[in-house]
Length: 435
Image (cartoon, rainbow, N blue to C red; front, side, top):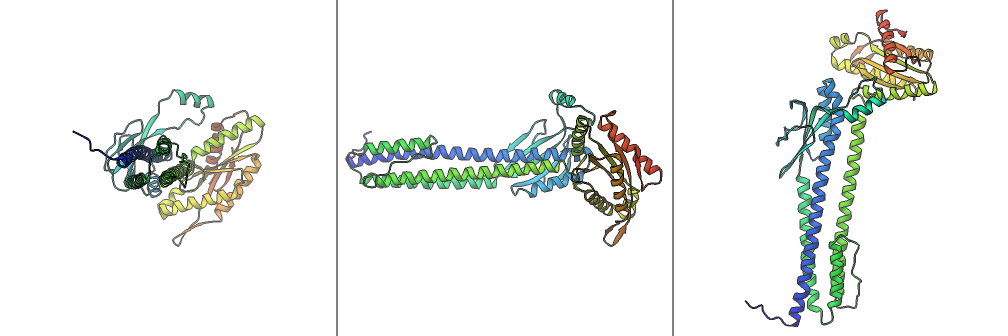
């Protein structure tokens, strides 16, 4: 088979167009592959991060059996991201405890490590929820030793199913853009090649070097522009294409940065949610334990006073039985508001569990804590809860204890305050007792 004989102009055209087309195709292929890989990686990281963020927030709710809290976590996560189709929280046997959205269409094996299954339209992620709780009296060395030696205990799973529609749309968009750029570059190279004459090999070589540099990732490479040269339009076209590619790369980086910042904010929100009681907005038991351990260490080191107040709402079960749980919940919310408004800025008020609350008062002597508790007791008695036209008066019993260097543990301090609280209840409730 004989190749057709081209004249000088035809050979020059062929010699100019083919290398340009090959280099442009290589550049587009490399860029497109890299862009799609980055998009896929970003999407997978995004889905995995969301699953990992929900796990710590759901751990305590799993432990306490609060299905409503699990449902709220699942619903909040799904509403916070339009690409999330469904979120479910399951126990360690795989039974669904809370579900937001339709059941997952893809089944993912539940294991001790994060599992991901990607289909043409959906990506499903299953993340284990691992138990992190430690005994309250554990020392710092015990915490460190447990972290190094103990195997994680899986108490449940978070299963998230996300739509790949937005990812597919972005991939299709970049394919269309790159094809248009490729076509434009090819037409431009053809038009310029027709206009060139002898002595253009050096400019062509220079252009090829710049294109090759861009193909290797140097998006700042540009062709020195000579407006009087025969290849000036081609040089301008190459530079224009490079600017578009660089602009697309910058846009991609901005989107990645925005997604990363959004994930960071979601992580911070999830971490904050894991430390706050959802109903009352006060610190939960885990957050209170951490703060109390820190304040005890400070009291031991500097000899500063430290007091603790335990509170229990009187006859709270009767309130639930008589008025209903929605009134009981509002009583807890109102009581938490009174506590938050009555303590100092350095104090920490938290929900200990059920209708029990606890207040840590750094720098407060025992008599100061007793006076503060008495003020709170009077405010509670004078502020009945009103819900749907129903007025529900209630009282609270208080147990106050002061930290002692002779018993430098949180358990000892809690024990004294707890005994004082039970003494207040035994002595008729609606009173303050000292441990």
